[in-house]
Image 1 (cartoon, one colour):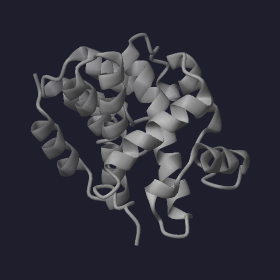
Image 2 (image 1 turned 135 degrees about the vertical axis):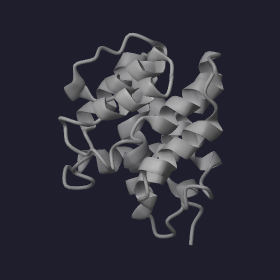
Image 3 (image 1 turned 45 degrees about the vertical axis):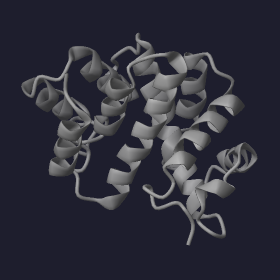
Length: 187
């Protein structure tokens, strides 16, 4: 079993940008929260969330990410189920999401980034002020955080079998628990 400490060391070896590190932490938080909800292995799910984009800074192209990362994880002895979940978080890989872990990673990835973006435009930059209503309002604005796939957010909730509002609320709450660590505790 690979530990969070090992995963964090690998993440920081490949990722220097603060925004990418915080994104990894936010996805880890959401994955851990869903693991608790589903009665799954919180440590494993957290590591998968932490590492899902670890290769992105070095290998940002569709040809490389997350395939290069998968190769590195295999070399380091990470479980194939984890690697498959990581490959499945990116639609362009064509890797099907067959496990609950894989479906959850896909469901929380874009949403974590979007919730963070919504927080940045709040008056106090405080995650505690973000609501389902404020997230859904920004989802309708195609220019806001335009790089975030609204379709992936909707499809992710659907694949999980969770109503979109409930999914957004759950992820907001998961991230609020770690708001200070994410730098989103307010100014």
